[in-house]
Length: 55
Image (tube, rainbow, N blue to C red; front, side):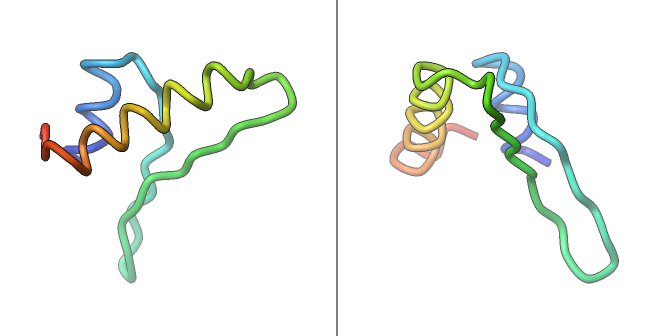
């Protein structure tokens, strides 16, 4: 998955890839130990991909 690879290669953000017969997607699993700064970093990276199509 291109988005998964981009987030890992450029930002070292780790996500879970889900591949099923019915669908493919990415799993984002923040938990109690995830800081607000880490969530902000993730959101900023995804927003950049949406705006710039940086894949």
